[in-house]
Length: 284
Image 1 (spheres, rainbow, N blue to C red):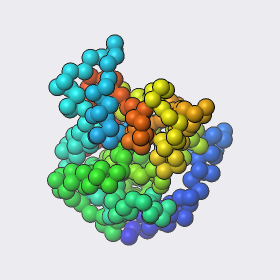
Image 2 (cartoon, rainbow, N blue to C red):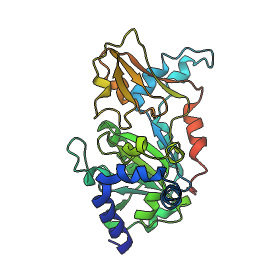
Image 3 (tube, rainbow, N blue to C red):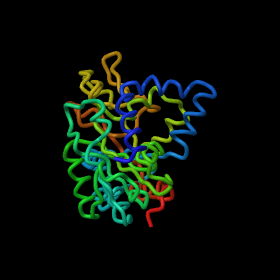
């Protein structure tokens, strides 16, 4: 393994459980600006809800903002955002492990399903960390990740360029497959607002609770469900903090009463998602 990649890998593993303390430093004047510039400059990541959750929710959408036809309902599949960029890229690199799950000694989700990286900068990634793969292998990898219950993030993440020694960052696209217990971005509630807003939900996504259906059982608010702690229960009802929610849809899956819905209020959520991040990384 290259010296820089080895150093960063060790540092991440050693400091992973202290990421919440480090995240709080981003709120400190001057120190926060320095951390932002060093690790998060130019970042933007989209969190994509699972296909099943998003599709079911889109069928429930009836608003004055947009009328979704029967044909459109069938194609609201967030995974198509991943497929679009995987097909565009000439270079695909699969990590042989998830550094977050390995660092956190995850017991609930597969450690061997690591990130997928796209773009010319993948040619610089140390081969001891994973391997270059074909487009078909990359598509199969993200499918396995979804089947394992992982949630995808896609975009540009400067930290990845740093620890992989894969620069420039404009030539590296990250497709992360996250579990709720070990995700790096569990630190979102602790991080500065400016950095936090760069980790966004899919365009048009909103998550809401139907108060009359909620029984207050708390299944949605358990620590292993919402990785950003956006869900709580008070006065016998579930509450969602919209400023924290990133629209992953895990709480929708966990609700036994079907009281939480994930609505996609957009005529073209996949197209808007692609447009939002396509200029972040040169995949030619």
